[in-house]
Length: 457
Image 1 (cartoon, rainbow, N blue to C red):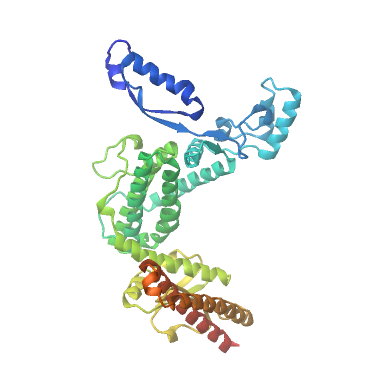
Image 2 (tube, rainbow, N blue to C red):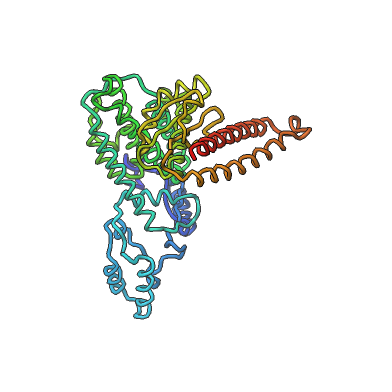
């Protein structure tokens, strides 16, 4: 940089902003850099020191050639057979006894060799492991899991691009669109905060959860009927616009951890008008956007998603895989209107679901249904007539009723204490009240299901 002369490079690059190093050389090397920098320039050579953890094997042992547990990053990226791992042991100067011991260690840890994981998966794994401790127990299977995550991103983006066209009009967002934009906004805010705090583990978790559990598992599935040719043009265009925004911002959020796959996919995305950004590396990193704040939609869709999860669990408990029919018994007008509008989403997100219907009266539920409570005013029922053993189901209802009644008695006993209102905090009282209402609704639903099954005998 031209030192001791005050060159432009020296002025521009010294002092640096951050030094990344290991704990083991903090006093051996980093302290000397600080002393020398201050002595020769009068300035600290860097403002911040980030110490990464030491990478150990999956068992927490320090990597050692004699143990055969040294993991070459290139082998993780490109993959390596067990035979080649054995051959590498003979490239050094290990004693024959150590080679035999190391070979046995490799057979135990890598019986099928090291699978090809790629650079992005390894980089993401190392960031995900950095939880503040001084050691990382590197598990290859976890790195391989992140390779599958890369494949999921690639396939999801490739599929989603089939749903895009050349135009990007602004449409009127549906409930699920507002929900996914709100979740995207939350992820962007969390990742920015976590990167500033050097909390890479939580940052990768936020990015992972958004892509896998919110974008891929929910929105991309829910938007399929919204982008069919039969859907209204305004609905289809709005869904496309939201999808593009999620892909664009989602890839940018992932880019610091997975630079290669995100650049590849981002280059394939069409560009919005007046956007000439040449690379994802120089694109603006997403931040919190007030235009994407939809707290009411988030709360509303949480109810829809709770109904969806309850319905899935109910169908799974009866081993239903096809021709699933849901009947949502709703007691509240507002909730009924909400869930009525989201029935296509519930059907789209439930594998094997034939139909879903909102009912307001108990007599509208067909005979032979099993049910489960979502919240005190909402219950999901599914038709199982002719598909189950009635005696078994009656016995199962009795068992669940006994448990629910016992839990209800416990809550009522707590609420019946003389000084309950004065000594128990308000938030605990509200939680107990909600629990009691849910248990009461659960008991009523189970009694109805048991009655239906009894009449069918």
